[in-house]
Length: 371
Image (cartoon, rainbow, N blue to C red; front, side, top):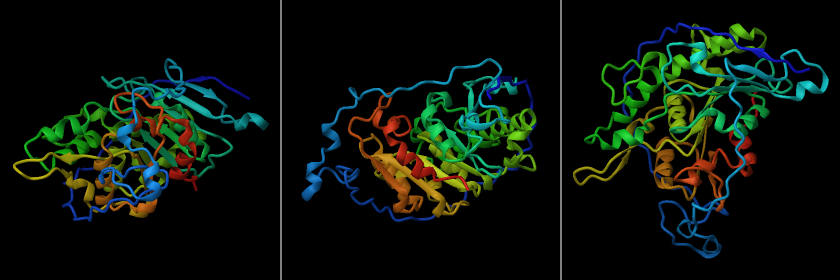
């Protein structure tokens, strides 16, 4: 049985914990990943090949401008946030359909001034049990949650309740921090400000009500009040996100935010698509280096970290070094390798990793099944 219910306006007040200074970085060996069968030339190793590897085209021989476009079907915007799909109370085959909410941030917090693309919330009543984990997906720079309905649906099919979260995603940290005068803490300060907005001095100030933490808590409070039978309250603990019940994930800048959160809080799982690759630019004869926060001790065990990158994306070598510094197990890192990747923007290989439906099987493996 289907139902249509309009979301009301709501406002939530969130109490934030006092921020702590970023921990001192720990050294990590920068070990390159091994060749992946079908993976082509190894990023960071040039095009030297041996045996069967030589049959795989190098990235330099591929073009990104003519990549076929994937069928991207955005979820239609609904004023006020409308519940689409199956009602919580359903019968028979109707329960196999997804429940989807499209909720603009300003509709539940009138103080929001920017970044007002709809949050996308989805779950399957027959697959998301009472104790299903929440999976959050953060888009990349200038991205919107409603631009990637395919991967959000796949995550929901894995038994998670899913939130594609709109947040302040422009500018990107890599557009700001490498230009600073060898400031090794710039990227960490930038991301902490975007997360909680409590730094007095920041390379990119974020209003408190626009921070990721406030946006997420406001949305969860709204969902819990409006749809109490959905079980959203379990993802809050004393007014804060109950991180132990939450999977954090994202693409590019969004993956960087997911990684930063996992460093600070113990989350249920981490899934990174092509990031972080924060770096400190070469300076006074010193080589470029990965931002130190990437190597900090993680509050989330490294056994729960999972990641990927496309072998031909422009920053593959930086991503590879960052994953090594973060000590992500090599067995948890996938190298995507479609030569005709269907993505958008200036680096189609990069954006294809969460848009090309041919990666569906790998998406399922990265997220696993919700307990």
